[in-house]
Length: 265
Image 1 (spheres, rainbow, N blue to C red):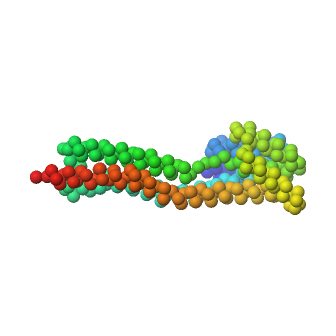
Image 2: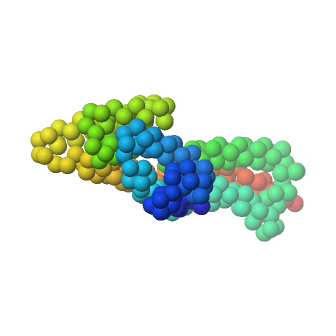
Image 3: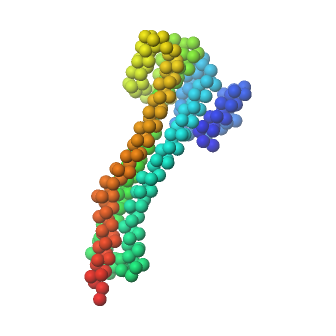
């Protein structure tokens, strides 16, 4: 089951009156991915210390899983074209050499007869390996799993909903975040916390709702940025194509066929 399915089952069992331990065993929450296990432990720890309702907290986590599932689905679709392009251009020199052999141009046989052709083949293969490494790095940087630091805002909203003061809610949320994730929230999240607090004081807007909405907006912005990054991947893949794959095409396909034609009786 996916993370969202496990969390949905877990929340349904909680709503049915099962305890946290019983719901965790029945829903097999141990099968959650590592990142969601950390978030799960974090929210449970915050609820336990703050006296907040675990059902509300884990319903929030289910919504986060749903949003991330949708975002990752979009990212996988967006990344299909760049990955296919990379595979195509990497196999193009090899395919051309095979086609030349089948056409009777001896584009493969010449590698066993000419030291120059064999040298060109080795150089071409080295260029293809370099292109593969570079392309893989470009694609890997396009899909990054980041620490969901905006979950601190969700946790503060849960604590506020339990009747805690803003100061105590922030202390509990930040302390448990540090314990769960191994580092403190970044300065941007803390700045947003102060900004929302000041805005609530100025306008009288419900501060818990402000924190919850900002967390949701932050997650959506992250998803949009990753989508934009993937759209630029196709352009970035032109660099290894021009620098490595095209010269490899010449060395593996064009040069051997030229040697074979020149040395043929």
